[in-house]
Image 1 (cartoon, rainbow, N blue to C red):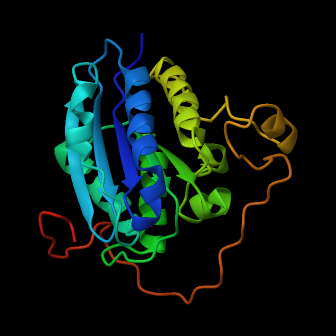
Image 2 (image 1 turned 90 degrees about the vertical axis):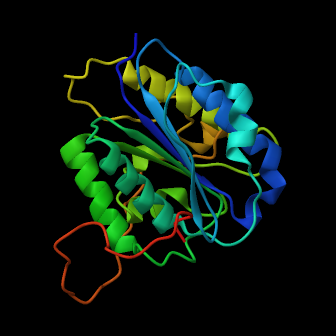
Length: 251
């Protein structure tokens, strides 16, 4: 029996994801299938390239027909990488629907931010830190072609919830199934238990990676959190979310 804890998936649809097209769909399908339980949890899926699109909005996981996923997702990689806008809009939208606690947010990207116009890195880091601390949200960062530990940590995500994937056939699918099992296990804990999600079933060093190469995790034992570059002190806005006009496609 799992507790009612909602899930958000934020998916990169930039041009560089083109070679992984079919595997992305299978990975999302597998992740959702594992989360299908008898609770009333809901899920949303966002995809982003130069623009940000909400494709599934707060639907009940257990009753969702996965046969509709291909059409709902309509996954056609192109454009650039508005990662920060996607994260910001996803959190903002969930906050408008309901002030849910214990939400798990999974971010999947094969590149670095290069086109957001509404949210900055510092802004996103502040938002993630607030929701992790005050509402017990858990953010997972899966990245390819980058140091996912550094990139995830730079926006406030704990290194124990960061992992690298590769574009090799089958890699993302297997990682998503493994992470989904971790999320399912976490959701089975008592809601009153003071705990945070960790990716327990992933290899944590090069030896384990060579034995069972489902994910390219760097060793956490000697990992040092990267220092932020010096930033001049600036005025901090009184609100978290910017009051910018946005079209329905969140451009």
